[in-house]
Length: 163
Image (cartoon, rainbow, N blue to C red):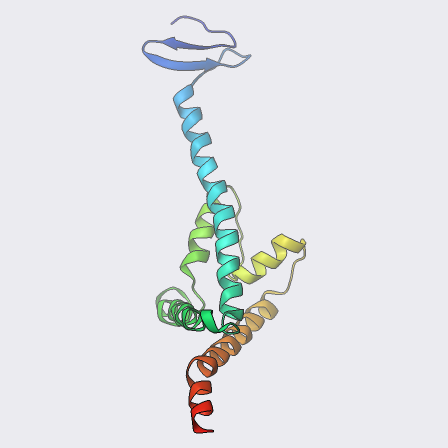
């Protein structure tokens, strides 16, 4: 085998890069790992933005008349994930959280909390908030939003018609 020093070259039909110790590393492997890592960083930020926006929409979407029906639908889908899929995966299960955690684990982050809201507050503030407080607050917020969405989508119309 031909010796390569601190260069990228072609040897036996394969591309290699040599470090200062003359240890040969396939460039293809290096590029693949870097590309895969980039995908996980992208997924991390995608889920951070998308999941946070969905959470805010679930909590507040009932306020605006144009978004009320979509808000009701997203709340029902969230409820189905938490309590329907939750039968199999644990109450409060969210597929977006699960996919985000898979990406974070590929980036070497482990011991992630069960609650996405706890993770979000911890990540954005640097605090270590109490998991039970976050899970309870999340449930209260969810049920408040469901009650408001049902009222604004279905009961308010009937109440106005009876006047």
